[in-house]
Image (cartoon, rainbow, N blue to C red):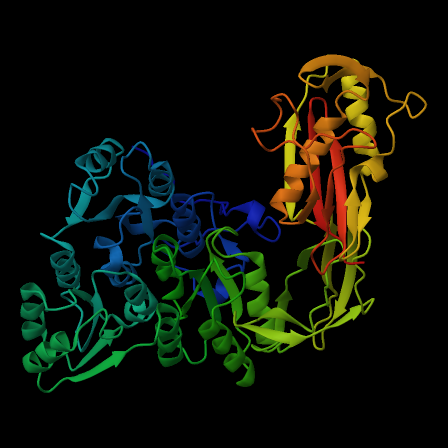
Length: 580
């Protein structure tokens, strides 16, 4: 069948790139362009990790190729060692999904770029990449398919190394097969130098790896990662197998520290630096083919931090100090490597900021009760360009806060060395009551409801100083028609009878229960002569002007505010502190 030999336009995730570049393909077959010949987009990205691997492949291998590598994008283990093979075969790494049907991006690249006589290397067993991939490739006219798969991930790493048998092996890399970060950190350097990446468990060197080391007898062995990922026992086993070899462990306190250490060791003068998430293998794995071309580093970032990890920020600061200004590119979209992180790297490289410069200060939001004492903070928390958080002094305008009025107030803060204003939003709200009680009434009893509203409204906003006594009758006054009270049912003796102000006793009883909850001193209180339904038995307080009163004392050291709320069918009394 006829195959496309030249692809005239390189697709990258245009929504994530600067401009819409069109790239000419290489004239000669199997061309891999040197990075200095390549265009320099900001991102190599797609909407998914599979699209991203295709975008990376079209960036590094634009012309027609003799070889491609298919690796799963869903599990890291088998593919960790594939970068060395990819570089040796001048092949891109294309990530595939769980089925051929879901792997359109990889097959599109193959159809557009691979010679019909080219070779497809499938990394991993049939349980990871099923036979349907081989069947589809055969259907599309590709007959040269080599599957590299071992009994487990360790055996697979050996078999990948064994495919490189025609290359001299003076150096090997030993990385953990139980995590991906350290192997990916060294992968572009290992690929460019032809160092096989062999995987090990934490506790013991797999037998197949022992056999390979004994056969090849490398002169140098790099162990990536600390003893938490590769134990001292494994290091001793290697030393016993290769007593003449120089063994060097490359490790940092975290994956980000190890990543930067490897970059400093193997790429002291990079022309490009690639950013990729340190918490996902797919983008960095596909990107090793690009980074390996010139031996440039892939620097890990943490998408959760907002700015660069401490180790990465220090790395870029050192590059600036050494008068180096490599180009910054990223693998993956803004969801994994944000524009802010890329800009931070550029700013550090240009020297416009330092790693301990302030990157951001979050706005401050404070909510206080009306009258509550509040002093504006003298310091705010700042995030530095190296993701470290510290407290820094701040000067506010206006310099003082007044909480006497309910509302929202904005204060602007100035911090030395930070060119943005820090905002503090102060919300002053109605204070929480020290006690509150609610009763229900029947709103269809119109006159009674109006009497409740009238008495409650008179009491709303009543202030009591410390030690002051409260009298319901003195505060509400006599319940008369001139005062607006209407006739409703009242209790006289042991009968219900119509009378002016019927329902006012629900007001006094509701307030009484709020006063009880506030632990205020009760001076006078009288029960009804008949049971009432709106409060529990024994929790009522009847009033009758002027003979029966409800009285209590503010026995606190604070001024108290009585607040009444009447809704459609409920009456609520709140007792609040009033400090102003």
